[in-house]
Each structure stands twice: as C-alpha cells, then as structure tokens.
Length: 449
Length: 152
Image (cartoon, rainbow over all chains, first blue to last red; front, side, top):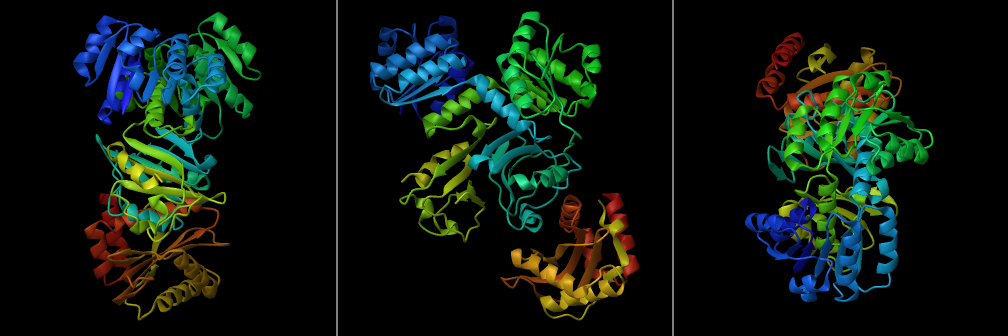
C-alpha cells in the first residue's frame, strides 16, 4: 500500500516510520529542508520537499496513485486543505486529517460527507482527554482503554513487589476468577512484549495488561496493590483545551475539580466554560498554592499545560505533597521514558495517541478514541464477526488462532462472554482481539470475511 | 497476607482416608463443623461443590484449593488436608493429594482472593511444598510454614 504523509513533525515522522515498518511505501511531504534531510537520514521513506497544500507538490509526491493520505502538519487549516484536495481531486480512498479545533472538525466532517472515500479526523486533544478520563477511575494503572460499550476494560498495571500477582502463574487466575472475568492479555517484561499463556508467571516489575469486567475492578486493584484514595477530588494544572476538557467532564460527573493556570486570561476563559469547577490563578509548581488548595487530599493531580517539562515537575511536587496519583502530558518520548521511574502514574502523549489512532485507521478502520492504547506494541481491535470470518468456523481452539493472538472477549446479545478454547464465536458477535503489533497482520486473516 | 497466620494447627488434617472428591469435602466440612468453625457441614459441602462446578479448583501437581464464600462467617478460615494417595479431583480426572480450603465471609471478596493468591504462590516454592507433603504433625507443619514465609 502506498501512503502519503504531509507534514514531517513528530506525528508525521512517527507515523511514517510505523507505516514503513508495516511494509507500506511511504512518501513524506515537508516544507522545511532541514527537517526533511533529517527524516531522509533516519527513516526508510521517500521525501519530497514542498508545500503540501498545493496540488503541484502533492502530484509530485505521487498522490494520484496513493491509497492513504495523512494530513499531519501543525496547522488545522493546512490539514483541511490537504485532505480535501486528496478526496475531491484525487479520490484517495482513505484520508486522515489531524484537527485540534472542534469547529474545524465539524466543518471538515460536513464537507467530507459529500466526497468519495473514507475520512477520519484525529484530534490529539480529544484523544488525550479521553485517555485521562479513562485512567482516573483506575488508580495505579499506566494505561486504560475501554471496549464493548464500556463492558470490558483493558488496563495495564506495573506490578509492584508486594502485589499479590507477583510470583503467581497465569493459570492461577482461573482459580481466582473461574468465570474468566479477569484475564492477563499482554505483558511487557523489560523491553519485550508478549501475549502470555497459562504457564507464564507474573513477575515483579512486569507491566501487565488485564482484561477486566468492570464489576471486578476493585478486586483487581486490591490484588495489584494499588492505592485507592477515599474520595475523588481532582486537581488539574493548565487551562489548555485538554485541561478544560478534563475539568468539564469531571464536573459533569459530579467530581470536585480545581483548575490552576498561571495566565489570567486563560483562567477567565476557563471560568466562563466551567460551572462548578474552582479556577485558580497561579503557578502549578507553587508549593504553597498547591498545599493551600489541598493537593494532599487530591485523588489525582493531572498536569495538562503546554509546557511538558513543567508538567513533570508539577507532578513530582504534587506527589511529594501527597496527591494519591499523578498524570502528566508529555510528548517527548525521551522524557516520558524517564518519567515512569519517577513515580508518575502515567504520561499521556497527545501526539503519540494521534499516531496510534491514525495508524490503526490505516491498518484496519475507524477506532474510538477510548479504545486507543498508549503503547503501540500491542494491537487491540474490536470487530463485528460476519458469517464468513474464520473465527466463527469452529471452536476457538480449532480455528487456527496463531500463538500470540488472543480473543479477549465476545459481546453477544449485550452480554460479555469470555471464551475458552472449547467455545465458539458466532456470526453477529462483537469480538475483542489482541496481538503484539508484529503479529497484527495475522488478525486480518482471522477477522476478514 | 501469610498462610501461617491463618492456618491453625487444629485445621490441619493429615492422612485422611478419603477416596473421592465428595469424601474429601465432607470429611473436612464435618471436622470444621465439629470445631465450630462453620455452622453446617452440609451447607459448606454444597457451597464447595457449587464452586467446583464453575471450574475445578485443582491447580496441578496434585494440589487443589477448594474454596467458597460462606454467609454468616465472621473471618476467613483456612484448612489443610492431606491424603495418603492422590485421587481424581476434576472433570478431566486431574489428581490431587494436597487440599487447601479457604472459606471467607461474603463481605471480604478481596481478602478472599488475596488468600487464594498467597496459596497459589506459596506452592511454587519447593521448600513449602515439601513441608505440606511430608510433615508428620500439624504443629510442626504450621511452624515450618511460618519459618519459610518469614524468610521470604
């Protein structure tokens, strides 16, 4: 498949490298010569220098025969122009536009509806808000995504030494949860990812992704050894689109929220958009302010400012002052690598979430933001099973599921079924499958009809 | 959570003459009822069998961990039972000789799971396994178990 990526910033270049690794022919269009020569040196992709919002530059990059077009410049307006040229003039079958402003997103959708091909907007801010909101109710988790209309959670926990799981065999989960309401679906051990089997062992330091029926969540938290704050009270630093978005959703859910920002104008804007949340003018690294506002009693501290280094510092301070859990927006992969060791519960990278959503769309099709994982090493998909899919041709133990691919759950008549090897998937079921990204191509042969 | 805190010597039953799944469950339930740990042995057997029907609690290497939540129980009760010979204990005839019973109040689901996890982990320790296989007296068994758990 041929993919054209317009804009070679962090999102564009990361996405280009993922698509190239998947075996696609990738061309990157970028106006900055410096950035372009850097890309050409480090990635196995073609590069074209030019302004991607012009028909000429896109033609020179080969848009006429490309299968996927990804508009990932830093400007919403440019991305809309690129995507609309691709759809209307060149009829590109799959088009992704990265748009941050919800107004732009609405306009784009309205126009794109009239055009041929499949379109998707990925919104980094919205993806980050969704991710933060799914992390907050699962203290101790480094990642959470929800599937099957919220009836199945997939949550990744780093196992501390005193966790009841550390040292257990995976097969023992069947003893604790005989109805398979809790499964271990993926494990990262040091830098290796694998889809585990019954004979594997949970080890201290593993990052374990569990699939969890929501009714068992408290039991899993207890076994993991996660600290649960007695009441929900959230402090958000940064009246950015993400910070305000998180505060708005929390206040709507009845959770007490305080929002801090050092810019008076942004505070006023936030106060205008929020109803019950308390908006405070001040620096999120101000020791006294945080203490006065009760950060020590906060169930979570979420740093959402545009200054990602400041986010890390603010989280470390909040943690020292007693916040039960801390979350930071961090886009720089080098920085986020360090943060895990500093005791911050999770780092959320809006850009990498965008990359994940776009890559998923290219590989398969639409994905809800709530189903995106922070890690790209595992691929989770939710699909409706048709009559012709291989998965429904016999008991799951006999349809030839490759090692490293797992059926985590089925939704049948509104009820979640966690199948064993002797059970069958049925046409009409919705299935959640998981695999490591390197094996993700095998998923297609299982669920394609 | 340490099993040696939870397991009282009077709930350790060595060399029990049982030959079937039912016989083991009934034997232990009756002993526990006699000691006043549970009210009704018949109710306990029914609850344990209900749990076995959800999925056998045999975990391999001749170990089974029958367990259930018991209404009205005040605190968690652990018991250990050893047979002279392994017997079939599961739908696929998996055999078991060492039986760890865990009975929990309904109100403590998380603690119940913690105890099950503790036992599952403990049995992966060959030293601990050996104590359960070979101890000749209940007191010695619990004392040896305590030493192993404190050293871990």
